[in-house]
Image (spheres, rainbow, N blue to C red):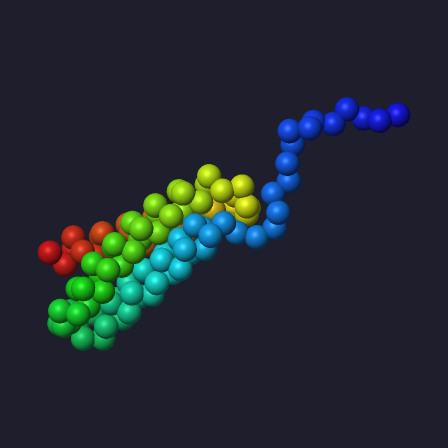
Length: 106
């Protein structure tokens, strides 16, 4: 007796979508830039050089780009949904943090 199987059901191969990997890198570098800026600001009691403002702006741009790549990764069939969601969440958190610190710095 053969069971009725759904012919349209596909199992995605293991791995990650390339857009998701790019989103991971951009979100990770963005978080590193934010942490460096925060540590330097605390160590110098708020008197930081202009380069740390540029790091914050680059963190904001990289987090937006990482968010876009993470959303594009949803279309790819390769990879798990957890990895795709985590890359979008990491870029979103980096965007919110850099936005808060940029507004606070203005």
